[in-house]
Image: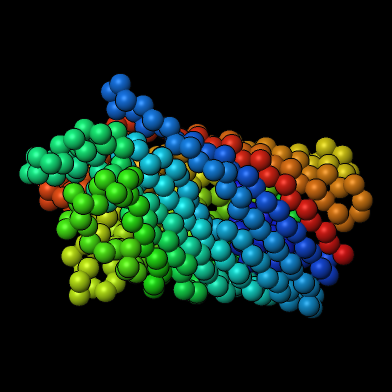
Length: 410
């Protein structure tokens, strides 16, 4: 249904969309779990040069359990992946100095309570216990950097020619974040028997890796290290510190049930991406490696997501659904980095729920997401020459996302 849910009574699953919805739980226990397969591709083109990412599928998951304690009080706990990103451009493409591959995963464990103040009004709140991990690889010395070294050191000229299409030296970072806390609050109100409104707010959380690992990888260490030796800091004996904000989300929505068979819903989600102004990576120990710290400007802007969805009760055992959403990009044209080739995206969704027996449901959804291709560039500074370098072109993205979910209530 376009991932709507702010104004819908979804049982235990309301803990993600709007914790107040848990207050309208109509069973003593409601349990659901599921997994999605994300098959995504990105394409970069600049003149005659064209390159496509080769991403492994990612599999975000969820599990929810809700319990009705009293007629007016419900509680539950949820586990899901509310944020994540992964892209693999390969080791030797033209933009290796910005990114080779990256994987970001964030997990949330959320205990939640909801209070049904009246038959029509419910409020809810959840404590978000967040943790995750990051893996990122990029060239530390690119082919262009090696060519610059060859201009100052003629002995490196044969190597510069040999590695003109191969990344000589890459740096990789990986680490797990400390546990961080946030909160999720919401309210839901039945205006009438047919119309419900809702609002929810999910707070920003600053994820922090306090001591991650760093690794250097040569294309051929025996050949390259004697030439690059003094210019390569001992990062493979270092650690790194970094933090990344997960944005706040404020959603308002309405649902309308014109008949017993039809349910319609729409909402607007305001995403606080403006909190992400830069990504700083600090190497430890700072006394000897601080000069190699990296600061990537992001300067994201706040965005909106517009969602609509419809559900139709085809039979007593089957519901079918359709939906769509429009997701605005937070990235400006002159900060378009292949690390996150963001653009306005259109998502189309469909699916159905089948109940083979009473209180047990099998959910089969599918989503297709396509980006509105855009041109953009990003400027960084070469670690070898100290000069600014601009990398830009035309980006497109698309993703297919089949999923399966199971739910049971009693």
